[in-house]
Image (cartoon, rainbow, N blue to C red; front, side, top):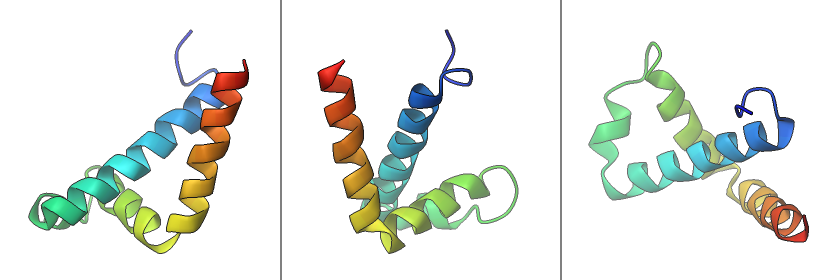
Length: 71
C-alpha cells in the first residue's frame, strides 16, 4: 500500500521530510535557501517548519516512534 493512502505512513513521510530538510538547511543552507518558489519551495517551507516548531516536531517524532514500536 502506498504512503498516500495510509494516514500513518503519510504522517511519517511528512515528519521525515521536515526533519531531513531542517538538517540539510543547518548543514548546507545554500541548498535549501536558493529554491523558495515553486515545487522545490516545499523543502524550504519544511525546513522553516522544523526550525520554528522544533519542540512540536520532536514530540511528533517521538510519538510516531512509540506507535510504530507498539504495533
